[in-house]
Length: 196
Image (cartoon, rainbow, N blue to C red):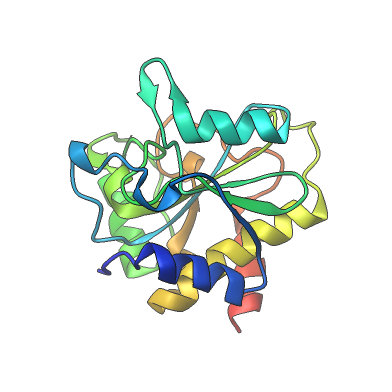
């Protein structure tokens, strides 16, 4: 169990990990906290956006769309490896997922199959949306993969978590496929190596 870090500490942690960060608007106070609590936090969730074009992707994740108001994550990781901070606090990124998966993340052990949607993930996870069409063909540039690694490692380092606290949306919510184009096993290996 962990209390979310402050917005300032979040920014500092990302930069200390060597990430390239852009602050978008009033990101520090842009959240969905009026819909429920944010925290305790237990992990980091990685997504793909199913969008093309960095500016459009950042704007969509900041504002959201009809039926799903923004912010849709805390940071948008674009193809060039830049992390665009669009919100901080509760964000509409994880939705309902599997309580067994959450328990595994908390215990930092192997993940069970995600076969239920009974737990509020927006409360418990930091979220990063990554610019990609999600079709399995759109490439993941090296700079973008490195930025995902750095962002997740920064949060894990702050909270004293291992790489097992980082999951993909597909490991949380039945029917989700993101991120598609790399495996979370390979990303967790990268994060583990960086933390070590």
